[in-house]
Amino acid sequence: MNLTEYELETRRDFLRKLGAASAAAMASGAPQAFQARADDTVEHPSPTADTCILLWMAGGMAATDTFDPKRYVPYKVGVPVEEVISTFPAIDTAVDGVQFTAGLEGIAGVMDRGTIVRSHVQPDLGHILHSRHQYHWHTGYVPPQTVAAPHIGAWMAKVLGPKNPAVPAFIDVGQRLEGVGEKEELKAFHTAGFFGSEFGPFLLPYPDQAIEAVRPPGGMTPGRFADRFKRYRELVKRSKLGETGSAYQQESMVRAMDNAHRLLSSPEAKAFDLTEEPEESYAKYNTGRFGLGCLLARRLAEAGARFIEVTTEYIPFIHWDTHENGHTTVARLKKEIDAPIAQLVLDLEKRGLLDRTLVIVASEFSRDMIIEGVPGSNAKDQSRARTDVLKEMKHYGQHRHFTGGSSVLLFGGGMKKGHRYGRTADERPCIATENPVGVEDLHATIFQAMGVSPKTAFEIERRPFYATKDGLGEPVMDLFA
Image (cartoon, rainbow, N blue to C red; front, top):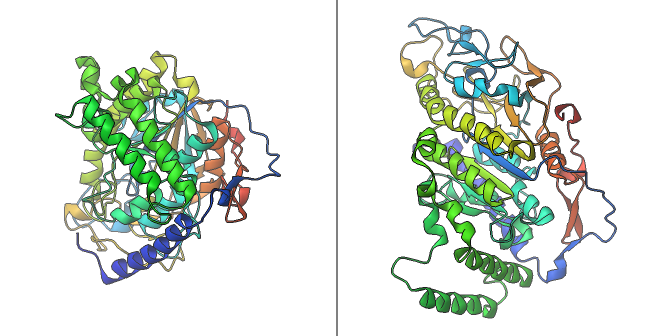
């Protein structure tokens, strides 16, 4: 991974500030530092969904090359870059008047079960870095914060609790937090923050190995494992404050360990074993780690998980982070995501689960061939394929971060079927021109569907911390059936 000095310094600065925020959160002190607000009179809405599955297109999925096709210009040496908006032709979906781009035929075929939001917008955070935007999208807060903000999945786990006591309420599939670039930034939002460890994500980076996470280590007898678990639990309880966080954090860690231990002996552990899936079904999902992650998500939803995130995995300049070779990379990614996402929707529907399961397909921002951020942004261009005309294939595709308009797909969970919401301009800059939806309002919509008020607040360090920033997120009710 070759980073410019600009990128290195901005990421170092982000980590320094975020590290200080995390330290402040861990040092928040006694259990009473985190309490439900005594004057909380918020009424939670009636839920339209019991489970949420977030399918995360990590790295910045270009809307104009996926779910929001514009003028298509095929590759040809000498074509001015400014003429190219979509590098894939449009295809029809199951909904009249709604088109996607070629390579997404499977998802296009189930569009009559869902809603497409084409006007999702992100703020210009000064430095348009994946670490900042992914933190913002997953927590609803722009870093750095004075406390560690919980992931949206942790909010579901804390406020709603588990659907099945034996199954972790919040499960994250596909993202490695070790051995990849920007691992500290990724760790920063893969957390329950001040809620405590018991509400954090159960991490399963390799879906085909998920069953290993709910089994004792190989060669260890159940009795020996139980003894080691008991001793480790006692060690955590005896550790000094500050070594493993505040008293509240220590107690939460112990409860998280108890929950994990209970899962090991539960029948629900079979849900983590993809070898239990019929061969024909397994093959429909087997396009790689993401595809098998979708299969695992379906099995976990059936077993009673509350919130499941499946990611294509964020690694700088890999997958959706297309700073060059955009068209070629997206063509490959479509083969990895199209069939599994469509099959997940169909399988949930077949099992009678789709109506009460909210499936979301989203990314931290979109991409453009020319503009970094939005018109007028001072963000520095990070493209590796700078040119005025197409000279070779690596120049063809969307390379620059674009925050002015992206697409989000919503299936099930009380959303309208066969519906389009919002628009972006047909010509560059393809900014949202109708019904823009920011991160706070999109989160409020997700919370609304799950039966959580976006004004829900908990007290941390003697001040309220809200589910949506300052409690101001408003659900987009036009998206609901």
